[in-house]
Amino acid sequence: MGLFEKIFKRPSMQEIKGYFKMLSGYTPMFTSYDGGVYEMELTRAAIHAIATQCSKLKPEVRGTAYRELGRRLQFKPNSFMDTTKFLYRLVTILHVQNTAFIVPITDETGEYITGYYPILPSMCEVVEYQGQPWLRYTFSSGQKAAIEFNRVGIMTLFQYRNDFFGENNAALYPTMQLMHTQNQGIIEGVKNSANIRFMAKLANIFKASDIAAERKRFTEENLSADNNSGVLMFDNKYADVKQIISKPFIVDSAQVNHIKNNVYNYFGVNEKILQNSFNEDEWNAFYEGKIEPFAIQLSLVMSNMTFTEREIAFGNQIIFTANRLQYASSASKLNIVTQLFDRGFLTHNEGREIFNMSPIEGGDKYYIRKEYAEVSNLAEAQGITGGDGDAIQEGQGIQGDNTAVSVDGSGEEN
Image (cartoon, rainbow, N blue to C red):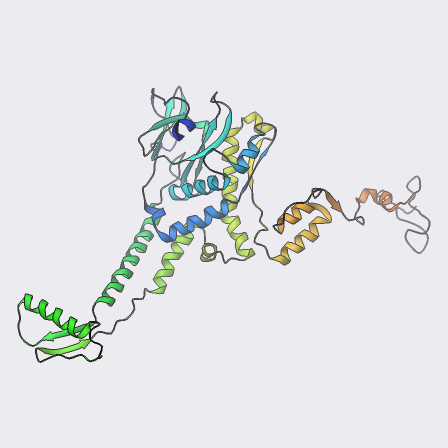
């Protein structure tokens, strides 16, 4: 049994009554584009940077339904890839195609979900079967399969005209053509500047074969390694011999920056993100702009394809979280841990995780400083005794007239 049979266990749908009717009026069809965006060095680097950071997201399954999926999602969503590869490939497909599909892997009954797989079809059609929308996939191998629309997770970017799928990357094609033309210009410029070293004019008229033979002779005698004297000699057949000074081919820096900025703006990255030289503020901006929106959409997509409306109403959901303090400075980490630990917001192990340290036994307890107390329990926290609202304790209380302010909120002195 191959990968196709493991994922699509149900028989392919044969009876199709037509395309599912769309509100937008567009044909509900998605087609992939071979090559293109992922074949250019700069665009691939931008997608790689986004996919690498998103692959660090941590999946969590909340609720009692599908509880065992939590461990599977954290380690191995399917039999062929771990969680990092699953997320990386999903993000890559999404940014190359602007549409990504997640299909469930089920048990023998075909109903109980045991895992997930990101597929890459060459074409997807929304068709109608028994009054319900189905997705019919066509893969590059020629195989076809169909699955119910509500069982599939669809992630999109630049969704506008189509009710189900994202737009293509046609808006980026002019920039990619500029990148290709620029690279070709650099290659040809280097070739031309490296080939021609001397220019000589023959004094008489010669046949083409004689010119080629003379050029070969002149090169072998004067420009080869055999000429170790450093002296160039020629007779009166040449009216003039000039050396061509080779200059390196330099691309206009303004043009290069313009092309780069077009790619950065399209994918929402910058040069520091691509080169991993960002600081904590730049990381937070990148997280807010790219990683968090992806995590939110993925959480909603996978929750809706996994749980019923009733299960979601009872708090069942799949979420993807990230440690935003990974790239904070040591001073920021120390300040956050110090301020939050003694207020009961962090445990020992959560604080150690911020510093990339392994957890310790008994480190999951919460602590709070003793001088903090709930306002309504100040008397109890300070050991003050008394009845009927009295808050007088020997040797304690407000100095001066041996009276204490009531803690019942009345504002009257007792």
